[in-house]
Amino acid sequence: MSTADPRAIRSREDLAQFVRSLAKDLKQQPEAWENADLGSFLDAMSAWIEDMDGYYVNRGEVVPPQPEWRTLAEILTAARVYE
Figure 1 (cartoon, one colour):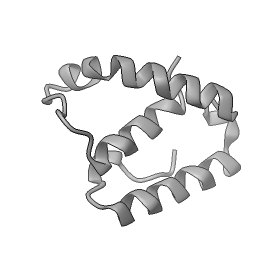
Figure 2: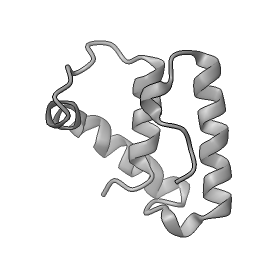
Figure 3: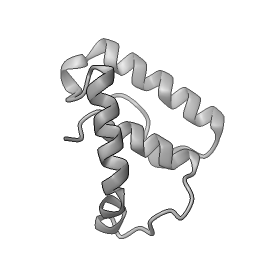
């Protein structure tokens, strides 16, 4: 995937650019996306949000008490491939 690291997202502008990058990546290489249609993407997004504590725990990071711009970028990134 050619998008930036979601952990680098710090602002609304960063997130907007990140989402544009995701859209470009989907157009250029849809085969790299497990969830390339909107329905499966949203289902995966919902499932990852429910399970996301494990992602942070496994990385040795604190689970964010409140979502940040970075958190949304991580959710969007995970929804590409989460089952």
